[in-house]
Each structure stands twice: as structure tokens, then as C-alpha cells.
Length: 109
Image (cartoon, rainbow, N blue to C red):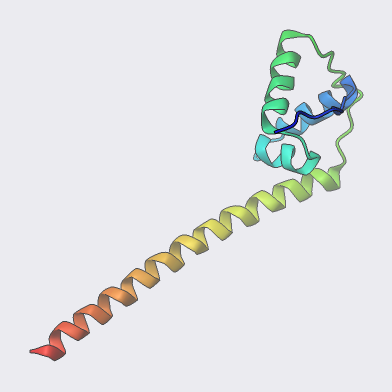
């Protein structure tokens, strides 16, 4: 497999904003990385660099769009609801299969 010849480079403002997005309650780093089209490990490395002071975070100047923040929270809520519905669906399928098996056993005797 050939190596990449060109790598993306991001400035400190972009990195600090990405890290600030991960600090929103209820927002996962994996979702932020996916939304920004970067690898999760890169985002976690940036978080570590911010903690060490290697990336100077200007928290006062970082403005996270309220609509974007609300959209990320809404997405998280929808994902939780979707996972609950998937679990309920799987349980209902198992219950139906079980009842059909019981019905099949009782009709054979």
C-alpha cells in the first residue's frame, strides 16, 4: 500500500475549536471527529496537546455556533432513542420466535 504524499495540516484555532466541541456535555469525540472528517486519534491527540499547553486554546474567543451545539445534542438524543428502539425490536422478534416455537410444540402432541 502506498503512503500518502500530502497530509492535511490544521491551524491551532481549528484544533482548539474541535477540542471545545468535544467538551460539550453529551457530545462524543467520535461524532465530532466524524463531523469534521478527521480521525478520532488525531482529535484525542489534540485534546492531550491542549491539556499539556502545546496548543494554545483561546477559550474566550472560540465561538461555537448555538445551532451546531443544539444540532449535536439533538443528534445524540436521536441516536439514544434509535438504540433503544433497536433493542426493543430485537426483544420483540425473540418473543415472537419463542411463542411460535411454543405453539408448534403444543400442536404436535
